[in-house]
Length: 203
Image 1: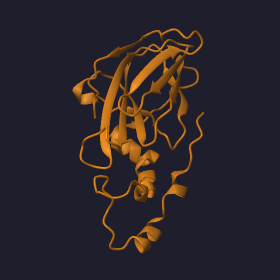
Image 2: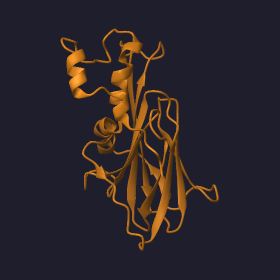
Image 3: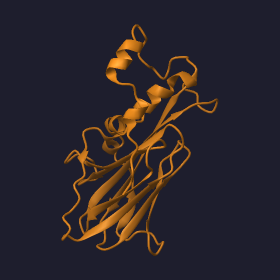
Image 4: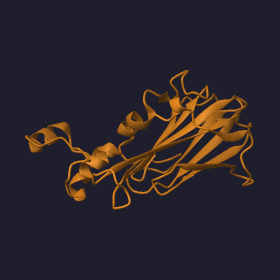
């Protein structure tokens, strides 16, 4: 299982923030300020709780099947660039409308990039991976020091019992490519196919 860092050691307590932050303007990534001044605030932005709100909406935590149920292991592996984050969501329909969805995990460069989770086998579901990056530099032309780049990918998935699927996310912050293979054989995962991302699933 993944080991997550406690974000609280990166963020000042509310009382400390009030004492030290009086009369300060709230953080806005589009303000023309040196990037280094935003590091503490970016740590807060990339915390798992805020990440879930940014990308997962009202998704509830995923509940794994009981031990005696047929199941499949999903091994999520991410290697995000700095200031890139992703949310992995599980839905019962391709339009991400009912129910609101379940969260399989949230990942950033500041927290653990791997997680294993048990999925109920032989049940059709839809896996949506949403990614948000804060990008900077002359390549991006949003007129601010930090620019948002968002993307989503969606898969129809019917997990095969007893298998371990390895879902690897790669990219440079501008796209959210995900490859899902059988971790034992290295072949494409059985019962998994990528589908066009529905507008409702883009977040």
